[in-house]
Length: 129
Image (cartoon, rainbow, N blue to C red; front, top):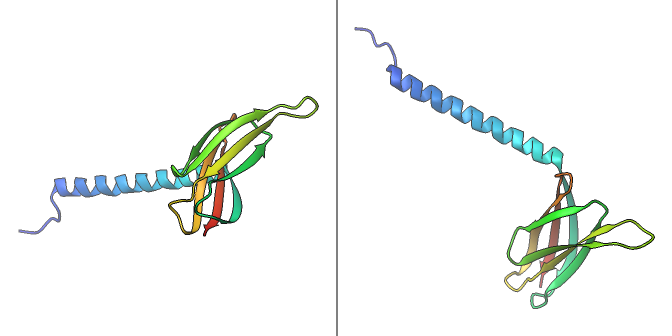
Protein backbone atom coordinates (compact mmCIF):
# COMPACT_ATOMS: atom_id res chain seq x y z
CA UNK A 1 0.00 0.00 0.00
CA UNK A 2 1.32 3.45 -0.98
CA UNK A 3 1.71 6.28 1.52
CA UNK A 4 -0.51 9.10 0.29
CA UNK A 5 1.03 11.78 2.55
CA UNK A 6 -0.59 13.49 5.47
CA UNK A 7 -4.17 12.74 6.46
CA UNK A 8 -6.79 15.29 5.43
CA UNK A 9 -7.17 16.82 8.94
CA UNK A 10 -3.45 17.40 9.26
CA UNK A 11 -3.35 19.06 5.84
CA UNK A 12 -6.24 21.36 6.79
CA UNK A 13 -4.62 22.24 10.13
CA UNK A 14 -1.38 23.08 8.35
CA UNK A 15 -3.15 25.22 5.73
CA UNK A 16 -5.23 27.05 8.36
CA UNK A 17 -2.15 27.78 10.44
CA UNK A 18 -0.14 28.89 7.41
CA UNK A 19 -2.84 31.23 6.08
CA UNK A 20 -3.54 32.54 9.59
CA UNK A 21 0.11 33.51 9.99
CA UNK A 22 0.11 35.14 6.55
CA UNK A 23 -2.97 37.20 7.47
CA UNK A 24 -1.44 38.29 10.81
CA UNK A 25 1.77 39.28 9.02
CA UNK A 26 -0.14 41.33 6.41
CA UNK A 27 -2.17 43.10 9.10
CA UNK A 28 1.04 43.91 11.01
CA UNK A 29 2.72 45.33 7.88
CA UNK A 30 -0.39 47.38 7.06
CA UNK A 31 -0.55 48.77 10.58
CA UNK A 32 3.13 49.72 10.54
CA UNK A 33 2.81 51.59 7.26
CA UNK A 34 -0.45 53.25 8.42
CA UNK A 35 1.17 54.46 11.65
CA UNK A 36 4.21 55.67 9.75
CA UNK A 37 2.10 57.65 7.28
CA UNK A 38 -0.39 58.98 9.84
CA UNK A 39 1.97 60.07 12.57
CA UNK A 40 4.45 62.80 13.23
CA UNK A 41 7.48 62.41 15.49
CA UNK A 42 8.92 65.40 17.35
CA UNK A 43 12.06 64.69 19.36
CA UNK A 44 13.34 66.90 22.15
CA UNK A 45 16.52 66.52 24.17
CA UNK A 46 16.23 67.91 27.69
CA UNK A 47 19.94 67.41 28.31
CA UNK A 48 21.14 66.55 31.81
CA UNK A 49 18.57 66.70 34.59
CA UNK A 50 18.95 66.03 38.33
CA UNK A 51 17.23 62.93 39.70
CA UNK A 52 15.75 64.81 42.65
CA UNK A 53 13.92 67.56 40.73
CA UNK A 54 10.69 67.41 38.69
CA UNK A 55 11.23 68.97 35.26
CA UNK A 56 8.55 70.86 33.29
CA UNK A 57 8.60 71.90 29.64
CA UNK A 58 5.93 73.48 27.43
CA UNK A 59 5.31 72.87 23.73
CA UNK A 60 3.12 75.06 21.53
CA UNK A 61 0.92 73.79 18.71
CA UNK A 62 -1.18 75.71 16.20
CA UNK A 63 -3.46 72.74 15.59
CA UNK A 64 -6.02 71.78 18.21
CA UNK A 65 -4.77 68.99 20.48
CA UNK A 66 -7.63 66.84 21.75
CA UNK A 67 -5.87 64.33 24.02
CA UNK A 68 -2.52 63.27 25.45
CA UNK A 69 -1.30 59.90 26.74
CA UNK A 70 2.11 59.26 28.28
CA UNK A 71 4.31 56.18 28.09
CA UNK A 72 5.01 56.08 31.84
CA UNK A 73 3.49 57.15 35.16
CA UNK A 74 6.63 59.23 35.76
CA UNK A 75 5.59 61.52 32.89
CA UNK A 76 2.46 63.66 32.99
CA UNK A 77 1.00 65.76 30.20
CA UNK A 78 -1.66 68.44 30.27
CA UNK A 79 -3.21 70.51 27.50
CA UNK A 80 -4.53 74.05 27.70
CA UNK A 81 -5.66 76.60 25.19
CA UNK A 82 -3.93 79.98 24.93
CA UNK A 83 -5.98 82.69 23.25
CA UNK A 84 -4.51 86.09 22.64
CA UNK A 85 -6.55 88.96 21.18
CA UNK A 86 -4.37 89.77 18.18
CA UNK A 87 -2.91 86.38 17.34
CA UNK A 88 -4.03 82.86 16.59
CA UNK A 89 -5.08 80.35 19.22
CA UNK A 90 -2.28 78.12 20.49
CA UNK A 91 -2.55 74.82 22.27
CA UNK A 92 0.05 74.34 24.99
CA UNK A 93 1.14 70.85 26.02
CA UNK A 94 2.92 70.84 29.36
CA UNK A 95 5.16 67.85 30.04
CA UNK A 96 6.16 67.08 33.63
CA UNK A 97 8.78 64.40 34.25
CA UNK A 98 9.67 62.99 37.67
CA UNK A 99 13.08 61.29 37.26
CA UNK A 100 13.48 59.97 40.84
CA UNK A 101 13.42 56.30 39.71
CA UNK A 102 15.89 56.77 36.85
CA UNK A 103 19.63 57.07 36.24
CA UNK A 104 21.38 57.57 32.93
CA UNK A 105 19.78 57.97 29.52
CA UNK A 106 15.97 57.89 29.29
CA UNK A 107 13.45 58.11 26.49
CA UNK A 108 9.76 58.74 27.15
CA UNK A 109 6.89 59.47 24.77
CA UNK A 110 3.79 61.61 24.91
CA UNK A 111 1.21 60.59 22.31
CA UNK A 112 -1.00 63.46 21.19
CA UNK A 113 -4.11 63.31 19.04
CA UNK A 114 -5.16 66.42 17.12
CA UNK A 115 -8.70 67.33 16.03
CA UNK A 116 -8.17 65.62 12.64
CA UNK A 117 -7.18 62.30 14.21
CA UNK A 118 -3.48 62.75 13.41
CA UNK A 119 -1.06 61.17 15.86
CA UNK A 120 1.80 63.33 17.12
CA UNK A 121 4.53 61.72 19.21
CA UNK A 122 6.59 63.96 21.47
CA UNK A 123 9.72 61.93 22.21
CA UNK A 124 11.64 63.23 25.19
CA UNK A 125 15.24 62.24 25.78
CA UNK A 126 17.34 63.18 28.77
CA UNK A 127 20.24 62.09 30.90
CA UNK A 128 19.30 61.70 34.58
CA UNK A 129 22.24 62.43 36.88
